[in-house]
Image (cartoon, rainbow, N blue to C red; front, side, top):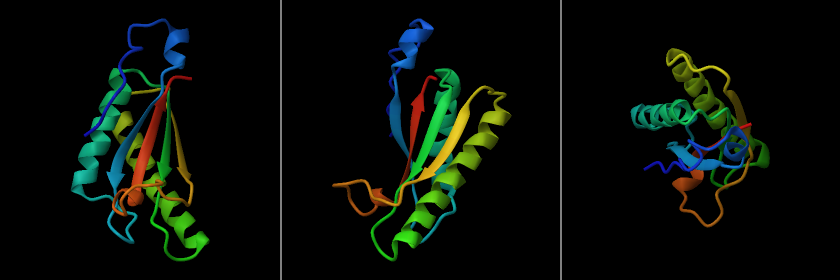
Length: 129
């Protein structure tokens, strides 16, 4: 389920800048950095919201379970974030959406206090520049 904050849609440009929405796009399988069919649907819905609410900045952040070396965990989080960012870029282009800055970040950590499944997630922070 995706929650989107639509409060600022009809607000002046300055007011919209203050509204940020953070959503979880995808949960990857253990040890995987490729998307499966269910992930494509969630990412497509996210692209639709980016277009509908005219978000201009999207930061994709990857998370992973603790396990393995710090370098391995960081590599997984970066690869997962980049996979989703590349897909969003293709979808937004097909929707003729321009002016959106996509940034992929792997932070090498997990979502604190979450189940191990959610710790293999990628989130998106949607905001206005």
